[in-house]
Image (cartoon, rainbow, N blue to C red; front, top):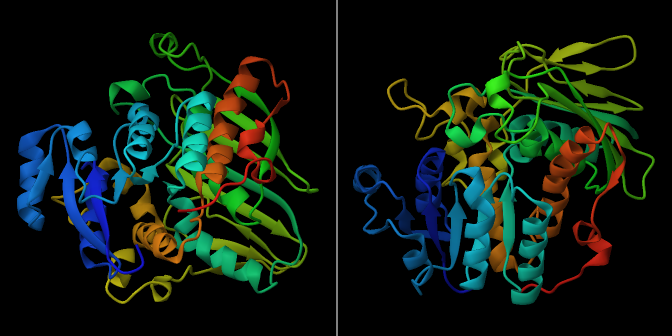
Length: 378
């Protein structure tokens, strides 16, 4: 792996197409194949980017010995099964969020990574966004002081999205708000308690048996005095799209803007100030640095709803790709690795379970806690 480029296949070409030029230009990568069930769509994208090897059958792609790793960008219900199949086929895996939809699926992925020595990374956009990198830099420089509390939210109206979204429990897709509050202190969730509130349209409820318009969760961090609060909504709640996190420190605190495109706030005692969040392209190889501010879905005639509502995902895509592509030749674990991804994902799954049980405290399973499971990288 150290002596050659990592040969990548992208699976799913919705917002996944954003990563095509990044992999094509990254010095560590060779984009060798794309995979999409819709052949006309795949051919259009393949022709546009000059990609010769194309698959409509994922199982056939996994048999290709020229592919070292897959980057999965398919619908949520497919993530776990496709990740498990790729690991069994000897491929490294980068997968868009969430890792899985059940605790058992998360366990299977963690165990497969342990057995095979292969690398798994959940591609959580918020923890590589410019906003997160800005706060992370403040924290590492000691400007925040001691972290005292964290809060995050992800509120989004999902009416009109694909069928599997209809009635989805809010916390089942919570990684955008769980990720940053665990990633900043590199912490693990030990247990959760969550309450549901309000009610979605009656016709949406039967699909998942979840009535709640909003779910709000508290997390206790493992081996820490820290706790955090998360708010998540998907339907029937009037709110502009918002993926946010707030960090309260002993010296300074950071609060995400309440309205999109306005400036966030730094609190320093009694003197709050608006702050312009800088770009962090300087952390990237020159070849892919421009992709923090430009990409496939920039123009008005070529847009993807996830990218539009997510405000370009904070310029995170090249940072995500670079973390994955750097970890492999350096023989280290990316962040978040399989265990960390499972901890982040299971917070949401178990939070909804807690809400359905009236706020009952539920512990995270041991396989999501790093000290309980150690594995060597290949």
